[in-house]
Structure formats: C-alpha cells, structure tokens
Length: 47
Image (tube, rainbow, N blue to C red; front, side):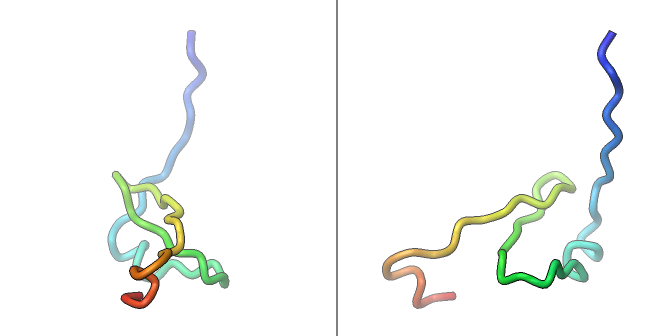
C-alpha cells in the first residue's frame, strides 16, 4: 500500500500574491510552484 501524500494546489490568486522575500522566479504548473532559471544571454535584457 502506498502512503498518501498531502498536497495543496495553489490558485492563480495565491500565485500572484505569493512572495517568499527573494528574487527567485516561479511558474505555476498544475497548481504547484516551480522555480525557473534566470534568463541568460540576450534574453536577460528582456526581463
């Protein structure tokens, strides 16, 4: 038998309001926060 894992999905409103006090960027993927890599090269000028 597999143990149940409690997970909480974030809504878009929760995602927009989220602030962890760092400069880390996140994406909301299927209700979960996923850390994104910082832009590099020419793309860093766009952000």
